[in-house]
Length: 330
Image 1 (cartoon, helix red, strand yellow):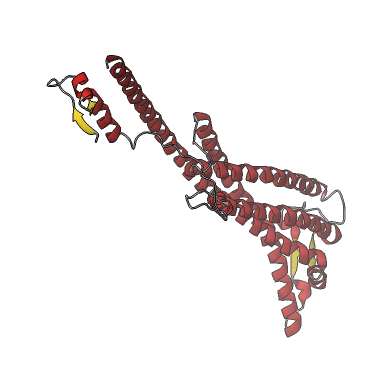
Image 2 (cartoon, helix red, strand yellow):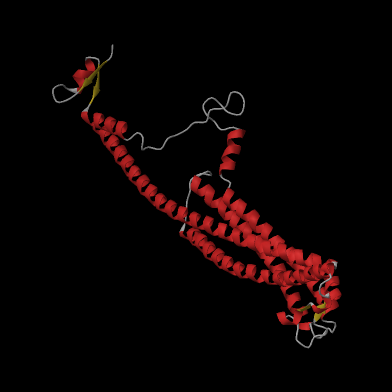
């Protein structure tokens, strides 16, 4: 039978060993107490155990289903919704606005300004706006993808789904730059949203005037020839443009054309698309602000963990040196 004996100054090590005792000196007891107190602070080591059946082993090894759940947990759903809303709004604004501008030029040339020199400046401005629409669509396609990728990076980093998380001052600076740029773009799109409401207002006035003419013809009260719409008062064509206005049946025929119907409704959809883009940018701004705050907190936590790991490493070095000295002493 083996017996445990604490060796002190009362008995020698050789005599205790001859008697069949396991000799434990006081320094060894101190090292054992240190192991017992600081065992939880040491890094754990996991050994892979192969699964027996199915996708998950009885020891908790992740299978296909768990990996899918983990990947779905790293999806930035808020950024994904904002990206879809931004793409939809920009697509509606650019596509519908481009076609509506073309229809507007056709209406002006056929009914309000028969001389090409009178609306030459307006045609150049509309053509320039169509080129700007191409640039807006391309830019926001790339910018939306970049913001979505930044959302994936931040979500995975904060949840620590792909290994050890490390953040740098450059990464936090890029996140802050996205916050500022999204704020500027949001303010700019507020102006675009207000500007896109102007043609809706103009077409609504023409449409409402046509409805008045129809109601007068139905009631047979006042002749519709006295009701006119003068496009020159909106400032889009000069005052010397001929004819510049449309009255009575001519105005009613304009409202019944396919160009007027399509342009009016496309301008409404383009205005709605600009509003959706503003909402998406506000959503992006909230997401980026919260992500930047998370990165800032994570950097502080990272610095704390580095200091803690350094202190634990120093304690382990002290322990190993003490054990070496003990072995050399014994």
